[in-house]
Amino acid sequence: MGKIIAITNQKGGVGKTTSAMNISARMGYLGKKVLLVDFDSQGNASHGLLHFNEIKDTVFSVISEKVAIEDAIVHKMTPPIDILPSDMNLAGAENLMEKYGVGKELFLKKQLDKIKDQYDYILIDCPPSLGLITINALTAADSVLIPVQCEYYALEGITQLLLTIRLVQQTYNRNIRVEGIFLTMFDIRTKLSVDVSQEVRKNFNGEVYQNHIPRNVTLSEAPSRTQSIFEYDPKGNGARAYAGLTDEILKRNEGK
Image (cartoon, rainbow, N blue to C red; front, side):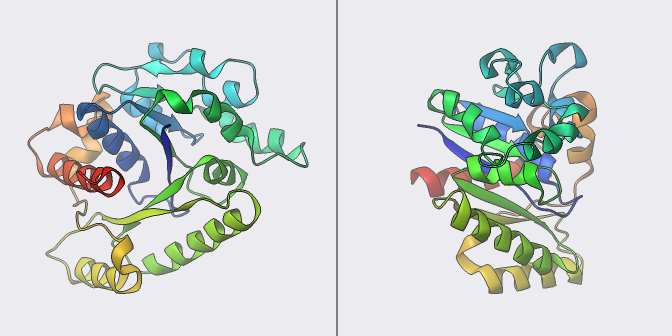
């Protein structure tokens, strides 16, 4: 049975979507069967890996039960992953969900349960908020992967997210846990990055991965070519960083 990992942080600009794309790609190149679910109405993960003509249906059509999830999934060769795309229509999903009393947090879980056994890993790219869309992702997920930008107030963002995860544990999904925390936009030349890294590791110790993601222009450029970093700049620092992080995630899960 596949493991569902939600990648989330309510703060925007922390490298969440970049991480979802590149961790998924690395897993795919390592032979894992991977589904990347774009659950953000901005659709950046979709547009970063798919050409416009590859997108026929979206996750909104799936959760509103207009399209079967199998029919909306796009199968990619490079990187070798499956993608459930998104678009701006997902912005109206909360209104759809709010019409339901009991069960409004289960829209995504209901759909992913249908295909979960077909994958080794399902990664959900969440929106930068803690609204009902993210609650749906956390209810569907087995664990949460948290990217943290090396900036002031980073710990405040983690604390707020952990409170939300605890609420989800108490009300919707008692089995969800923190998969791990990783640092993004790390620049060893700056005192701020070093200070934030030390503070996060001091407070969360074993939950923080050793590998961090550096500030790297090619990571920003790759989606403009509809590529992951492993096609765009496979020998660069960004690719090495995401390879190391993904390998560490897999090692924690599979002990290899």
